[in-house]
Length: 412
Image (cartoon, rainbow, N blue to C red; front, side, top):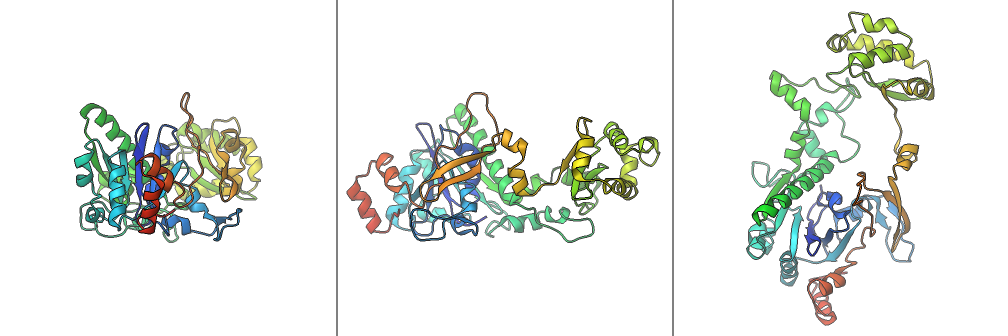
């Protein structure tokens, strides 16, 4: 998680104001709806930190200076309007307060207390906009002994248990391959915002939401946390691709790679035994129940891998096809993006970027029967919509906007 972002979602449809960082940018499920207008407030010169998070960069094709737009930034910022405002300038802070008075939702990503100095905290803004929903996303929350500490995804993964249970059985702890704590916190934030919108429909009142990485990471420990709460014992550590409570359920070597196999109950274990040509394993007392298989995990997994390593991954895929067994080849990201099922599900879209030309991006993962989300606009250039928003939303004329720019209150 990086520093300092604000997003604003405002009427007449629904408008969100984001003083924004990378984490606050994770509200994409909202921005993909055509009735949501998201205004992203950025620093006038450097913008959102993720703009610099590269390589890789999508290179500029219009002759402008710079390396281009970072892939990281492009991944989370479509369907937003960028307004470059410095709230450290009094006139800049006043502009944001005026925008906030017209907003339905604000999402911000600053250390607790930072925005209060500029009159941009919830209590101040709610006086003029009592229907405002104000989501504060931080590393460790608005209260507690860590509340003033900066929190990045990987640090929270480490301290809040996830890294300890991730990685090979006898190897070191490993971070998840994407910023999963940032991602899940963004999703929790969206769920919380929508719940607050529903509540506001009844009460007519907005509220402040305190969303943090540490709480969301603890919550997503899920069954692993509940197991410790039930037993009072320490967790079992890392299991690699295995499941701590289900066997067989892991990756097994093949002649040319790895394949995931999930014999998640006794019936499916029987199906797997048949596919492996070992029907007798299903009635072997060492393996006939899941509890027995967990107790004899090492023996059974070695026996399975002795067989899976004798054939190519494609051969096993053909054998398992149509059996009802859960299985999957382990693909890299390029193979994933080119996967026939991913293509059939329309998960890759092409967009036209004003400076980078044609780009491929990920599509919305949820299919709706009536109101399908869409990619209406590419991720914005820094301050691309400053004049447009100040003119159309706040009613400022060109001379006033230019004066604000000369006074360094706005950029773009």
